[in-house]
Image (cartoon, rainbow, N blue to C red):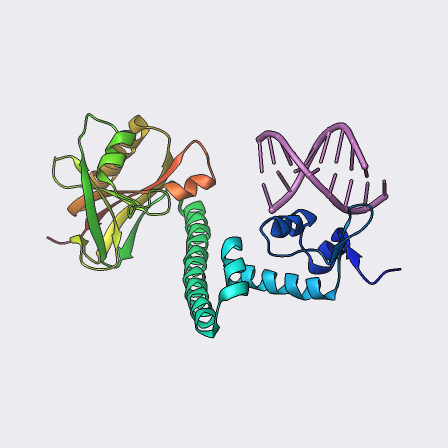
Length: 254
DNA sequence: GTTCTTACA
DNA sequence: TGTAAGAA
């Protein structure tokens, strides 16, 4: 038995695919120790170390092409800088994953809340919320894809954000999302009449809003401030055909 | 049975 | 990057 190993043995040893090893060869990163009589690539210890080196650099986020340059003509300064940017990228990735973790937790929590409060009116205390206005929704033109494409930027995260439709007076609704700081529109802290429900279309939505008004009127609740319809589209993960909504309006003394 | 090359999604 | 084919 020779001391060298075949490509599949090397692949298994280093936990990569055979294809990937050949790919590295194609890119000039890793040549076999020699080619055997039957055209098999054979690898020795030197190649094992070299492959480990390549894999480490790939792990640091270097593109395959950059790995070559790194191994041939990078000096200590360039290596240090490479590690520095890799560190920064890693920190950014951690941040991204933390935000994702937060979002998943939020979806699960909201879904729990929704399950309990389904179809129930209740009065609850809400902390103040800052809203950022995006654009008006003219009453006739229903939500059109073009409207979003034209007026909303990439900052408006349609699926992950709570979309607030704010009805101020008789005018058209304004589409808003929550902001972390003062952003034009403030929903003050206070007692709010809240109603959560599922709805499929515009008609059902209007029906619910009339229901909401009637409920408040019946109980002679004094409503103050705008009516707000919150759409939690991400909760549609749980029900494909319907969207989750919450209606709310501040109540209390003038 | 393993690997090689080549092509393709 | 993975998968598939036919050839060695």
